[in-house]
Image (cartoon, rainbow, N blue to C red):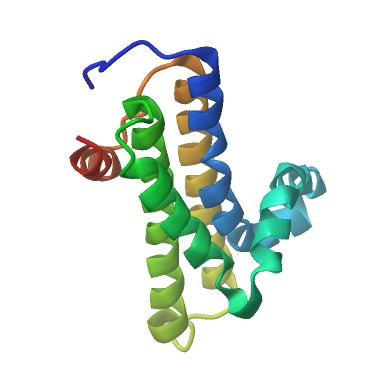
Length: 160
């Protein structure tokens, strides 16, 4: 992706921090891996402030409010550097994909699959989220744009 401007260390930190949101949304899929590998539960500790923010908002609307605030306040704000806006949009899109997967599972797959298949599906989703978030955080810390085929293209279109 083309560089729009140089990134400061503060820009890199903010760009990496937004990836805590899809990681938080992916934690429920890790329950089988957490049972098998207890050291993975340490991934939940950096997410505690986000969990507190989500729990303060009634009726489970915390994620919706955070989405709206980030989309309107960061992604659509031209005063914020493109690097931060792009990474914020990319994190939002990863969370939306997770919400769609959750909906598909609850409506279609939950009645059809059980046991081992659910465990494999959840482990795959969690590991996929972990890889995407890890890659994106590393790229953000390096000051580079994280390239993920469909998500990055959609993010770029939203943040021109």
